[in-house]
Amino acid sequence: MTLAEAAAEAQQLAEAGDERALAELRRQWDDEVEAAVRDRDYRVRAVGFRAIAQFRFRQKLALLERGLGDESPACRGSALVALESLSRDHPAAVNGVRRILHELATNDGNEAVRRLAIVCLKNGSAQPDTQVLLAGLADDDEQSRELRETARKVAQLLARKSRR
Image (cartoon, helix red, strand yellow):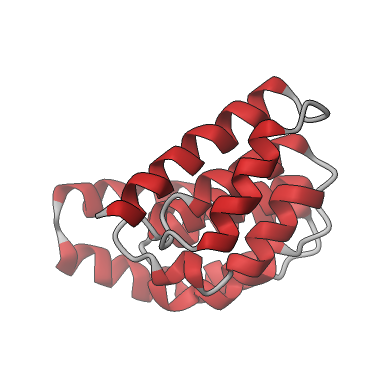
């Protein structure tokens, strides 16, 4: 079984609520996930970053942070997808890397990575600096339509959160 196959199985177990089987699978694949995110091949690293979320490895957030700075846009994207998934019920995951997400959202050379960073910000707390940054991106005509729309939607969501 490959790491990708094991991660898909882990995701199924998590969705089914089988915590015992998921914990056993995590134990079996822990070292492989660690090795994958450190591999020289960006494709292997990308699978490793995705696997962190599929295995629900919350204790590996530091590895995801490493992925946010990866040279490969595919790896940064995979790390962002994993972060978004893990932070849905745990805003601290986003709040801990907010500065990095701001940097990716505004300055990454890959537009898909920029949009994914913006999407991650929706799971964090509604901080004023994030709201200002997103409003600025939403109103910037030099940004693509997709990026502006994503920023606008997340800014609106955070505005609603802050009023609660």
